[in-house]
Amino acid sequence: MRKMNSRQAAMAALLAFASAKAPAVPVLLTDTGHYYEHISGVFNWADAQSDAQARTFNGVHGYLATVTSSVENAFLGILANDGWLGGSDQAIEGTWVWADGPEAGTVFWQGGVGGSSPTYASWGGGEPNNLGDEDYLHYSGGTWNDLSINNQSFGYFVEFDPPSGNAPAPLTLSLLVLGMLGLRLSSRRSR
Image (cartoon, rainbow, N blue to C red; front, side, top):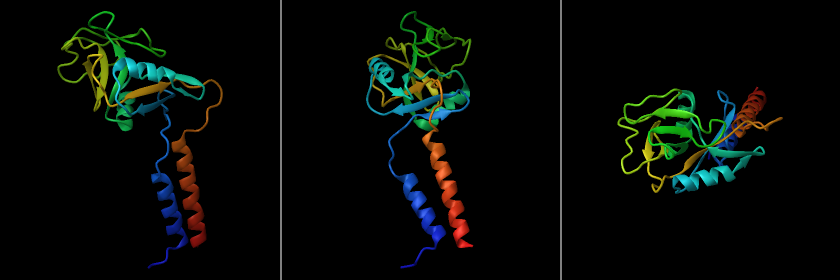
């Protein structure tokens, strides 16, 4: 068996640490200053909304994610491929509003398939089509679809506003700093 030098040992330890199954934590999107997390499981929209509102991070309650830019929409795709978002046209058919968070009540889409957005929307082709009384917003691979409240999704996206005061550094930043320190130490030892 071949013996590892100190740099190889440090890299192996770092890779083992990084690949260990850590509990999911919300991730900061610097463009918005908000934290996001994908919650896996089988939920209808109402259950996802209740569950999101019951979650806290840094002392702040969550809500189903509201998406107001292409950057934010693409970021969610990094977290997961599908899940419920916080939009609905349940109150007035064809008037899509954000249900929770700081954008609660904000209209983001008017009309059906040929409608328009006063802000931002990422509907998939032929959506929203209200097929079978679909009033709730679902994210799938970067585009949106309207679904019935009874549909089940394999998760949802929860968003947390920035906390007031100082927030702990996101876990990803901490891991990056640890990794950089480990590489620096191993390169010093090999000299």
